Length: 406
Image 1 (cartoon, helix red, strand yellow):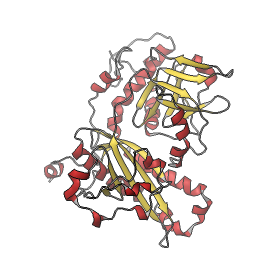
Image 2 (cartoon, rainbow, N blue to C red):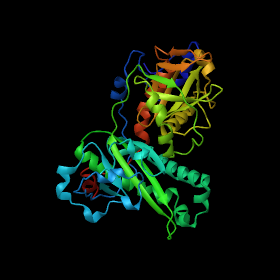
Image 3 (cartoon, one colour):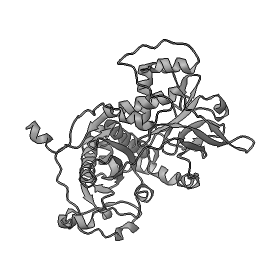
Image 4 (cartoon, rainbow, N blue to C red):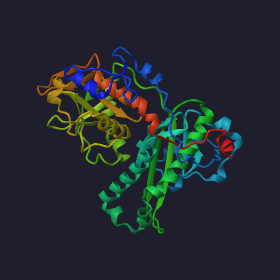
């Protein structure tokens, strides 16, 4: 049986409706179905647009980790091509990750992948996911995010805004300039990771930093590719804790340091921490967007949050399917009126929440359960699982593609 989201909304409101099969409607899993069964039914292929040029990637032969004491990436931490010896790749390569600096793969300079943003130089960053190991979900949106974040960071820093040493960098801060650089960096890392980990999907984090020079500014692009891992399974629990960030529109790497204390306080059985202001309004998670369903309507903050790539796709699909959206932050005081809630991010896609842990006004810790999951929530989840492949851009050429094209 196929149900459209309009139908699900009417069911959520308790109204009657007739159901007719249509190829334009979404296939909604039964409440008892698992996420795995939804994913298994996805057949849509990613679109292949603007494939990257062929890459000849070299690796450094010296995998010494002495450089891991550096706090900030800078020109002094650059990886000179002359020091690379591809003959020693197999002996020294860490197959669980690939690190790229300005298009050249090299040794990862930190003890853990978390240190990449925690200890690195402050900059604009974005985290993407691979699709079928050759494409990137919402690739164009990630480039746009880097441009927007860097612009906001420069505007907020009076020293950078007036520094003549960054004039050339600011002039080149555009989508058209950055897109080929980002594409090439991601392609280099993904190509190498595919060779070492066939069939494994990837989490791709890209950090862009800058510093003033007499030539008008120096830009560095760092990319870290690691295994994406599996999506969390139900039940999924989140904790309400912490205050919203000040400049949520910018994906500033400084936020990874600011949120660290909340991450360490998070119970092990909680998947995410949702930020709440003094009036009880819920804005976003540490790494996710947050949504509630109330009265058959989707509610999520329209301001004061980072506009994630999955959130972008979800809002577009809700408009297309006629699902009503309220762009105001859900209120914790109304949690008993919610039919359900969920979070979204690059790695999680759309993830229904089955339990919310929070502290009431009287200081009592409470748990609100949303089991069984609301049909509108699971319907939206199924929609994103079906659609995200179609919103992906190929950045890696598969073997034989160029020969066949010739």
